[in-house]
Image 1 (tube, rainbow, N blue to C red):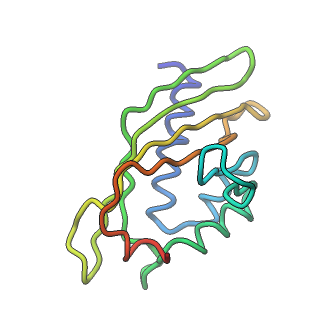
Image 2: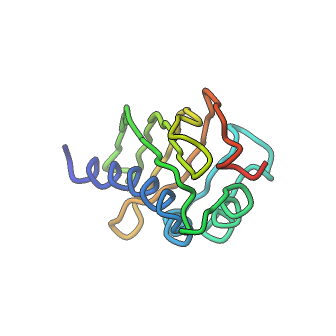
Length: 147
């Protein structure tokens, strides 16, 4: 695996680690040079650009518990990377499966889907350029999402 492939893969996994840990500042920081798109080719209100807007999106949508976490685990698999070293750009697709357990919800899968990501190199480091989230299957997200 190339250094770029390792760095980008770690970026993908770090997103899940920060989110599950409830560290919204760290999650948002991953999008210092990027954005999250809630829908492919969606209207402007579904695009959250930059750290402040990404943090706002998660605060608006996600339930957090007394320990400061959403009590989830985002499992990311099937990562496929396509890197253009000369251009300093990359794209990837991956699957996600979110599990959750709360005091009143037994451990279960609550949602599955896939990500379509783009990346770019800034000052020698890889950053998210865009993350588009697709929901493929939905279970009981009532203890995870606020809507």
